[in-house]
Length: 252
Image 1 (cartoon, one colour):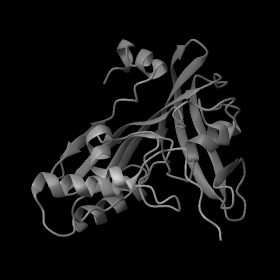
Image 2 (cartoon, rainbow, N blue to C red; image 1 turned 180 degrees about the vertical axis):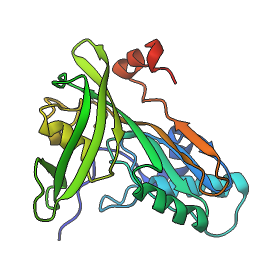
Image 3 (tube, rainbow, N blue to C red; image 1 turned 120 degrees about the vertical axis):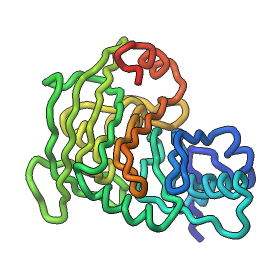
């Protein structure tokens, strides 16, 4: 009988309380929404590994902090890939979730900024990538094409080169659409590879099995209060990220 293999990310449900205390970083919270700085390896929603999810952790956090009996409501309007770090937003009410779902479908309503550490410089210091993505369900991978194909989805992002450190280069990416593995697939299409991303052509993996792709910032109008919100997430602590965040013009 087939048994799903354990992922390289160790995330045991038996240690849920310890995991919450040690790993989860709340970076924004009010009565309607909550944002977490997701660590590399954390999974947002359940999969065949059976590992504890970020949704479960946040629910447990809310239940403990506010002494809530019974089930805690928490909606997920978007996701981040498991090896990716950074801002992930959750809704604490159904009203907020409905509005956030609409906003994530609107290219102008939700501004998402990512940092990607890559192995090569792009041909242009800044530009727009416009491709059509086809998802390979069997391999859990997306392929970027220059022209529309049957079953493909439009993928658009803007990028600019903002720093170089030793043999690596930092790109700031303004994501216009939210497709499966979009940034990873589009950068691979133009010959760039995110550090640690073996699936999309990187030379070697990172020690923590994560990749150097970080959801740095998200900006939007609050779904209930209508106030402008900007949430910024610090990148993980490792030698490359540590050096990059010391650069004055990258501090936020």
